[in-house]
Amino acid sequence: MKKEFTLTVYTENQIGLLNRIAIIFSRRKINVDSLNTSPSEIESVHRFNIVITETEDVVKKLCRQIEKQVEVLKAYYNTNEEIIWQELALYKVPTNVIAEKVVVERLLRKYGARAVVIRNDYTVFETSGHREETEGLIKALEPYGLIEFVRSARVAIIKSSSGFHDKLKEFEQLQPGESVAENEYLNERDKVFTM
Image (cartoon, rainbow, N blue to C red; front, side):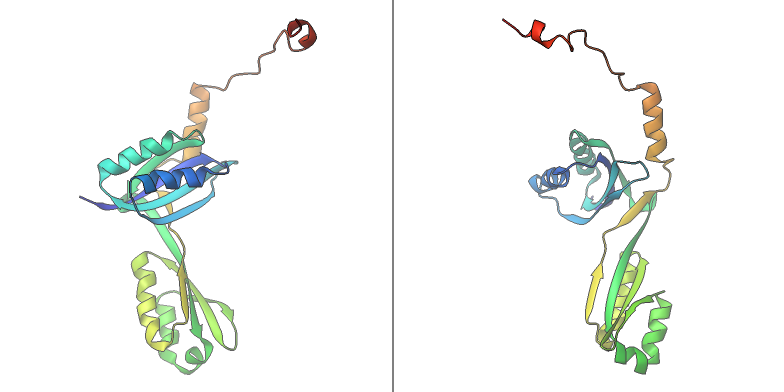
């Protein structure tokens, strides 16, 4: 049975990686509902949050396929119950409607919206929450002349995870990187490579 999953992928920050990850989804004809990428708590490691609606078997295979990319350090998948997540939304509404109608001001307070920009012709409000909450405010503002709306991708943190940073440190202790090996022929290039 298909359900919503959030894939969390830790990667090196390399050009072209997003394209290669997107190709993995497009080859399998899987629609990405939401995609967010940002730096992580570890310097030079980026984090992707990818939301898809699929079966768990397909999601497992996707994670394994994503981890085959050289720059990918680890890929996890979680259900909505296993993560804490939010989306940011911006709403543009005519300023005169807000000034004239107390109902609109009450709606904005009810949804926890705050003003970001106030101009003579329009006001932009911001709120965050789950998709149902941000869509609820769209429906509430439509009768009052909602001019524009935009929502960000999902930002998610895994509930039960102690953090990828700790796992990376643990991995480094178990399998430390190789130290630099000195090559005895490095300074004798002319002797080694002459005929």
